[in-house]
Image 1 (cartoon, one colour):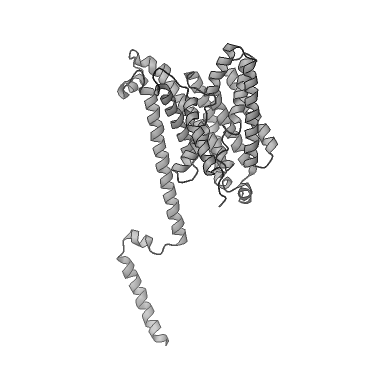
Image 2: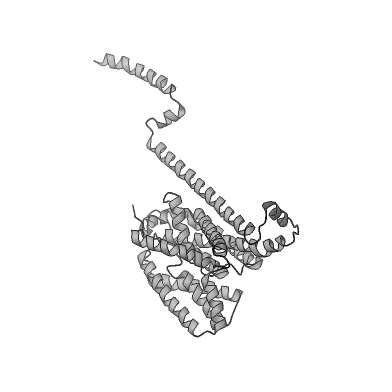
Length: 371
């Protein structure tokens, strides 16, 4: 009984290579793939999609930047723009580009990137799309401190920005202390309560302010890029140059954090690194608010849009690029959507963010599955 088996097995062994030799490399790859190969293919598809999304968003951000710089009341061609950057003096165009549109567009990119990155870190770490700086009181803490500096102390300029940063950090420390080690909904609820309290403080300060201070505080609270200049751009760029490398280092554990605090800790992720990452996100949002005011919903919108484009996967770089394109594009729309009316960028982003918040609440997509 064993003879047929012993003669047949070698023939099958010889037939298998000859049969596979007739297949193309792609066909051999798809024939009976191992589990490791399946995982490798999935990772290659994920990486390829992320590169396409990031590249597309980079092109979009660059496009909105060029539109904000070159188009408007005075149109500048790309060759003239390059000549201006090279030092050429073109009557009218050089002043408009170097003193108005270019610093405003650059500030929009930096502010949007900071809001987008900070918001995505909050939403990913706390595993809740509602946990953006706009909702949990970070932006309102900066706003309340800035209004206090304007109305009560009569400050302006960099002093107001410093108060905004300190206010945001102080409010976040209080929220973290009250919420304790419980992330997620408890921290969001404490943040929402804090934002409501701080909003009442801002309203009270308005009742104590004279007309000039109230107007200055109201303009600052709206969120605008109108005060853009190279000094402000340089200060924000330096702050981001310090913060972004630290964010890149701390964000290496973000994949584990997305699985939940207990699971991440069991897999070796340090809770201290997570807290440090949240602290850096607070600083990102604080310096952005100090530069342009609390641009409504910029941090709230960027992260979910980037996740949707990336098939539900988090990409901090994509979120930063989404925020940059969103703020720069919204600033251009606000300037030219209605004739003879210049809407602050915060009005446009607020008009986009409010319906999105209602959509999240209506569809129940306010938390992530743990699976």
